[in-house]
Length: 177
Image (cartoon, rainbow, N blue to C red; front, side, top):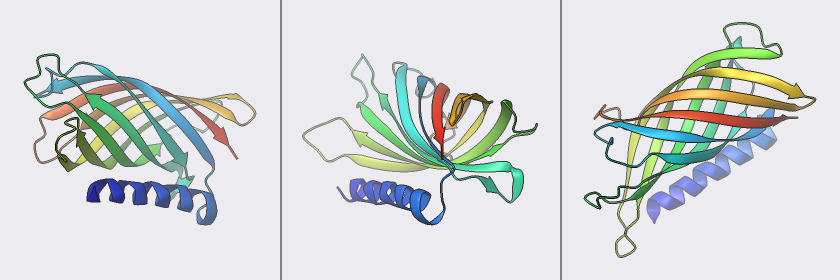
């Protein structure tokens, strides 16, 4: 329960800072498909979804800071492992290596805090790990304040273990203020 409280506090801080003192440039939702690799290859592939905030340039003009929160489920049909929901809190930096025009390709990285809520209702099994994501993709302006994000991610859920990894393909849409 303590970790869930910390997760809710982090979510409130993201929303509070992005809307009041930092002035978010955009807010978006994203979703996609996750394929687990290495030690997690026995888990079923699953959908993921999340929300992100574009807080604008960081240090240089083409480096954007976009914190986000997402969730993906770990489920195995053999029942040898416990099922879990993985909540990720991400601090991502997107480098748009070409101009930020109508089509703006990017590469990036970001540390993450991954919180595991195990699916057993009889216990309060929870865990967390520090991870890192590497990603690339493209932002495409649709019309007016709307833009589309296409993104591929390689996720290290636990940087100490390095064998709890996944590949994600995401599609997102954002609204610019």
